[in-house]
Image 1 (cartoon, rainbow, N blue to C red):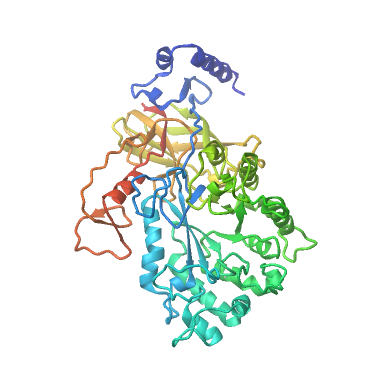
Image 2: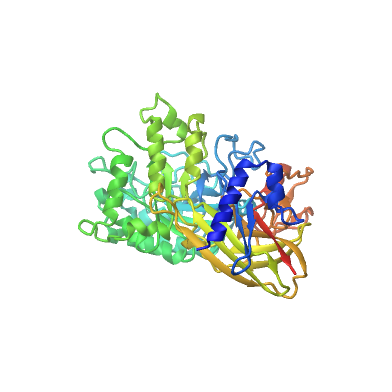
Length: 597
């Protein structure tokens, strides 16, 4: 209990609402470094530990942070009017994104005749996507697939036009056709039975192992979506199942959990360090088997309110109930409803876009209330990512979308900081902080809470990293309830190198092993960049020429066209400007000033 602080803080808040901004600035300005610019409420008092208190101002802005929000589908950015990567017409109504979702069939990564992964194909496709994503501070989710939709067009010039998703050499091994002028196309019977074939399973394991050797531990790879089974890697046999079958589901076409356990085991073996998600279906025990082994889960067709049977009213509730049902499930996960605390939950919308939801001529048209209920369901299940397929968002849904994105995934807010304002040289900096996660899920990656001292001209003097683990800062169990408060107490030795003087105290959630802040907080304070410079959105004026430059991993831009770097992609002035802007975003929050005396 600190009654003196409570009373004084109340007085301060009353003053804030009743006095002019000029007088208020005078009251809380206690430093020549002008901490009022950071929008925080500052109150100094002498207590047991001689600490000062800061109440950082809250923000209601949508935050674009790693691993949460809407995803891009098969492109790097949708809503930039400059269209920096020339990936089709800009989609201005689509929200800012932090994650890119890409899918590749097996036959896109090996040639028709060689079982080994093709280096050129990998560089042109997967490597290039990972590099572009890293260049603009985005993460990538990948699904590898083995069975193309029956009549899906093939646009990839590397792929035989009659291919069904697996390379022709494998079709030849399995069924005796595919090479030497024979068709590479799978019959319905071949496609339906393929996933039980021991030779196919063996080759699948080799394929995933080779990919894992190359891409596991890649820090840009957010997670792997468990494909490799069924049409589009979606654990069904749509387009191929016999008409006499009860459904296109795997169970109704003769598959058991035992048949498909090797696929889950193969992905775990190939990508031991990369998070994984598994598609849920309303039949079978596959999902709970996977979540028991650390997988997150995802489902397709979010927003299906079809009359009669629908995903929203029948499919999802049945799937969730069955996952933990010890009576009907041979591999129940009794902790299924708690798995979101350690592994992600993702959704993909039904139909092509939210425009389809708003089209009253569409048989699957949704009412406004149904859209609200759809978003609420995703929040109830603690979702992190929504694949809305990089298509237009109707204006009517924008208010709903803003509220939704402000809850989706994690949203960390700093509520209070008690800190040592005056510290003897080589003394101890005490920082007691209080935090909340106002979202519906944690971050599944730890971004260490890091404090830094900065001079008025932007020079970084020192960093101090807390032992707090933000992965354990869970939101409320129900998205409508109050989030718990997490208290962190840090004591840092200043060190002899810190000279007497006055310094800004900043906080950032940084990438592990670096001092690069990656996560925006739900606080409205003055922001600075990783290099200590003031940051305002869109204040970066980039001068460009028409040179084509090569981007490499250390963010150094080389203008010598004769210098060749493996796995580099080439940029023109538009993409170069976009990349520079994305790498100069201020994610450090200015909190207060301290005096070293």
